[in-house]
Length: 294
Image 1 (tube, helix red, strand yellow):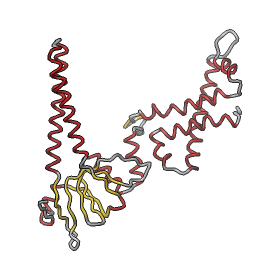
Image 2 (cartoon, rainbow, N blue to C red):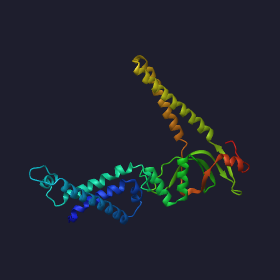
Image 3 (tube, rainbow, N blue to C red):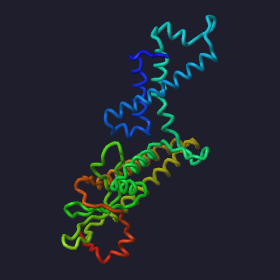
Image 4 (cartoon, one colour):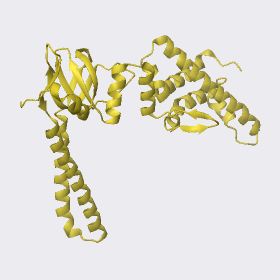
């Protein structure tokens, strides 16, 4: 089978769509040079072309065309009189759509004595970060996933302790860190001991408790509204709707308040960073840290 060169652009285009959107290749495609992207797209397009050709060969044997039966290849040639154009278009469609079901594949621990990986986005992000082995990025990702606090020391000796809140995209370098601060302070210029001067944790805890209370109130009001609807008590719905709307407004307000505490720290200004455990520091380093009222 010889496909005209100009028709090969179709499977190549499908190959680009595939490697651009499949989670397993998307990250590497976005940060690869032109030559590697070309090779990846060509391999994906070639694979789709092979699948399309095999499918056509099997289909033509199972359902052979005759002058008395409906035949898709014959009908296609009447409208598109280009040799092998149908296979090229089929390869485009296969490559351009195959990434979607693959992205939903959850993986399997054991199948035929081999581990089949998951192609879910979060799993592939973790894989890319692990393969890059960037120590800072791996630690920040662990902090976010496990809800651990990190202590970041800036080059000007300022110290921030908090939880990582920004999303990770291994396709691009991490230029900044989004942090929800819990404490802040500085390092002594001589001893380099950590001196924490501001404690955000109590304030954040209070806001979080109010946020949880507002969320619980919303769930109660929604359940009450459902009960009124089932009981045909339409007269009570306006009061519940007003309370529900006010509770949602309060919830959104508290979410915005927490967002005001977020810090964006440039990676270029970070001198060091490590996981921070308040209990360990309180037990072993309490004498080395001094807390002051702001």
